[in-house]
Image (cartoon, rainbow, N blue to C red; front, side, top):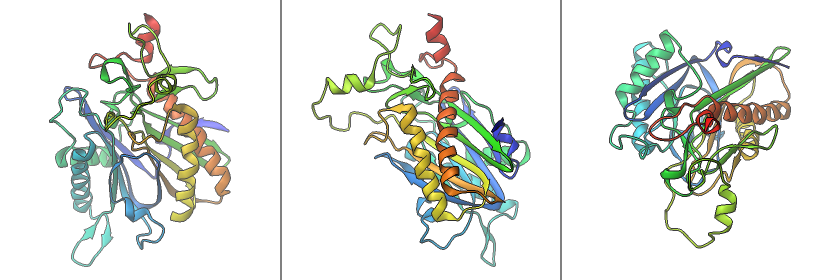
Amino acid sequence: MQEIKITDMTAIKIGQTENVEAGTGCTVFLCPEGMRAGLDVRGGGPASRESQLLNPLMSAEVIHGIVLAGGSAYGLDAAGGVMQYLEEQNIGFDVGVTKVPLVAQADIFDLTVSDTFVRPDKDMGYRTAKQAYTAPNYKDGNYGAGCGATVGKICGMDYCMKSGIGSYAVQIGDLQIGAVVVVNALGDVFDWETGQQIAGLLTEDKSALRSTSNFMKQNIESADNQFTGNTTVAVVITNAKFDKAKLCKIAGMAHDGYARSIQPVHTSADGDSIYAVSIGTVQANQDVVGLLAAEVVSTAITRAVKNAESAYGYPSVNKLHQQ
């Protein structure tokens, strides 16, 4: 098994745009020929669009784009801009009078990071789709949908840390599989290979880390809608050939990567979602690909927090270790 870049998977194009001042952004995945896709949602508060298209019972066999963005439900307008750009490129499902691009979207909640009233919109979606199509520019860190990502928010934004977007991909023989993850979790982040906590809830003096799980166990009383600033979203990409039903299963197995790397995860305050997409014809065992999906997701989570830079008053992993 050898590491490759997520951008080596050339059948899919990834573009990113961010509004640094507002603390939000957009990451767009395009496959002009269409990609088979599945989805598994485990968190209790997702902000999403066209999710039902990925139900194996629905007739659409492929979609043309996936958007990960900030802005919570407000940011869902970005998909309209992606659709407009793809229609202009004559990409989509032929309905006779035009072509209708099928674009799914999942958003994180970043409204409390900087400017509450600036969110990804149709214009940002259009610009990001154009970026992806003409000059793909994917990078890990404070980019795209990861611009306003944070982690460790059980005690509110005063004790959280800066996170971002991360990726990891591998190749075994002809099989390629990778993941892009926007880490915006309520809980803490752990290095799945060592078990060490690397990001999350800060101590009261903000000089070190403490455990979100332990804090929750010591505060068991009910809270009414106390936590609103979360959701980890991901796209798993493989060149193995699978249909929607199998991709939904692979997306479900990929959530093991969330569970290994984020504690707690899949809470009622998170909208944790994973898309799994197939962009090739390689024959591979579904369960092996699911196993690998969980591993690349875990490593992408680690890279998301380690490549993040301090911003908006929230320290990054690197800043915390320098104190």
